[in-house]
Length: 266
Ligand SMILES: [Mg+2]
Image 1 (tube, protein in one colour):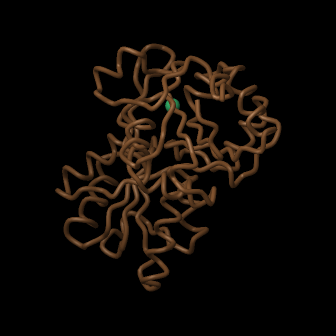
Image 2 (image 1 turned 180 degrees about the vertical axis):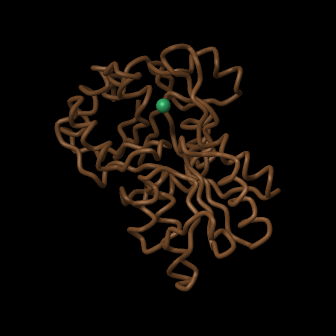
């Protein structure tokens, strides 16, 4: 395997699977860091702040990790909307159909988080995972977009994820679909497999796309996104997708690995 200057790790299914830590992965990451490789952690999950993920990554055994080495789809939305705000400083009203973490990020960049009942004055609608979603807020959001011209941003497209009891947990993508369907307007999505998050992570790393490797367990997000973006990828079999899924999805990773220790075979 090629020795890259930088490595971007998806988290769930790569560093841990549910509550179970994948020890090989932690060891490999610590070894890469000891060889002065730049390491980033990237997740579509915007329910927590990067500071909270940093604490978790440290707790599971990565010896050194900085807050700016973690990027969530919420952080990418903040980077994107900060630029929008710089271009149009008077457009700062945002209707949040999202977690408290994303609301914190929106306030940090100077957005005015409005009461959803004030939807007629929204310049932006942002959707991300929230268990407070209901018809009323979905309808406010759809009206803000379809009738009052608000721009529609989604943090990530994940529709549902499996949970330990064998059921599924409906995700951000399901909330986005409700608002898209009602407003007949497509959201601009920040997370994998869309390019915005790959651009943001490379900018943080101060690297070209050819210098970095994306390591993930999901073919249609981590690996498809890297491949569409023109970045090499390693598909690791410790997560949800299996080797057979490569053919099923028709998505070809640069490498297929069983353990992150294989990243050290250069
Ligand atoms: Mg994953």
